[in-house]
Length: 93
Image (cartoon, rainbow, N blue to C red; front, side, top):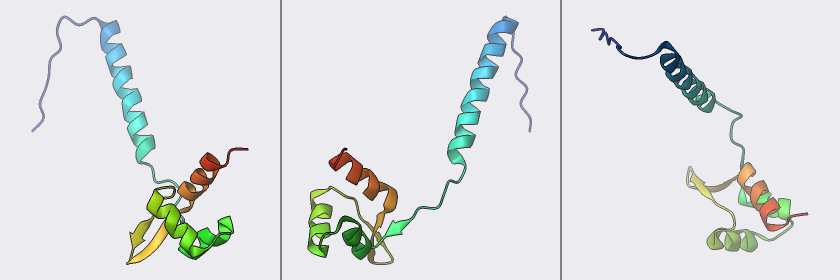
């Protein structure tokens, strides 16, 4: 069932501004919902090799919250983007 709403006592300029606001919010939602690049996950070994550290060091960093780990199929994985961001955050040039 279609509901019809009648707008009275509203200036055309005000209505146009509201419609533009709605349009911009819809565009933001659409662009935010578009699928981006697939997330690349790293193993513990790959993170250790990337930073040239041992597996216990990677484990320690995870426990301290320096890097966030994810359990996928009962295996520990790290998002490459988050690992790289943590590296930049910890070691600025």
